[in-house]
Image 1 (cartoon, rainbow, N blue to C red):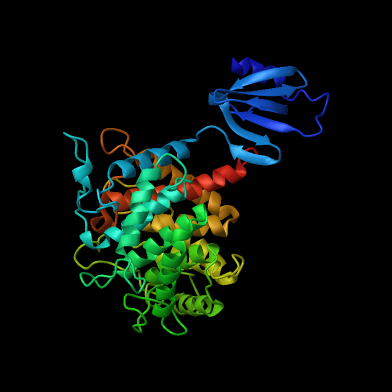
Image 2: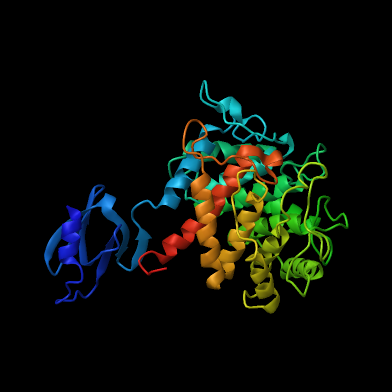
Length: 423
């Protein structure tokens, strides 16, 4: 059908409509007129050439009544949906996700592997990331295709919250604050997305814990108000606070001011690179485990994102210098995994999306390519990403897939915002 109809109708504009709707097809052609009917299979648009029907499968973009949206599924969207399907299929019976034991949910005769093992101590953190991946796709416990999955995950997190408000506080690892940060982020996102009041008090208690844990006038690390700070933990709790603020939970400005002081303290003014605990350090490693991986500027990406969340302008010279430095380390997938770091790619994508300018498009292009080309396409692993990167011996396949999905969702957000406008 449809290519011939599009060609005939394209750019015929002898009579202009007072309120023009636009239908853009996969081959870049545009129909301008008035949409008079939409069904699951086709869209009917009245143009100057007459009334035309266009298959939904041929449509990429629609503007109607001043509202813009992607109509068809992009490659990014398909990859996200495949990833969410994989996460849903590998959810534990208790509602959480297990970095170490997720494969018990694999199809009979097929096993998704963690080639480098995984840690059992951060299951609450990866559960938070997985839930966030669903909610950022508008799949909640009330809407979408994964309502039961999301409901079970949220219930799991709520059950793990103690009387003080901490989620995932554990004596088994001193780094349990990551559990709390990502769980708080997920609960606050669910609260924002659904306005379900059952999340109000748990979110408020979780946020209060974060506020009390901040070192006075500075940042955060593993122990609440323990005197130590690091850029990674600080970025993660700021993600949670950003979501909390969106949910209407009060976060005093002095909290952000302290964090900004920390980032200033860790930033090398000559290069813009940000350290893990001081200027010039090359980030965190597990000695004897992942020291061989490329030293990527993950903390710089964390700091750019966090500075912007704290209210600093993307045009601030220190942010610009850090952003330019980050562009020297674009995401690259190598089969040995020495350059693969999903944690870095996630933070870098967040940073460049909010920073914008020419940096974002360059980052977007290479990141999307790396993720789409290397997503598993067959078997039980379909939709996931092989855990071959720097931190995948901690979070395993579940974490690599959740972070990759969140990264693609940032890319998809931009694709939606630019649909029909040219890129």
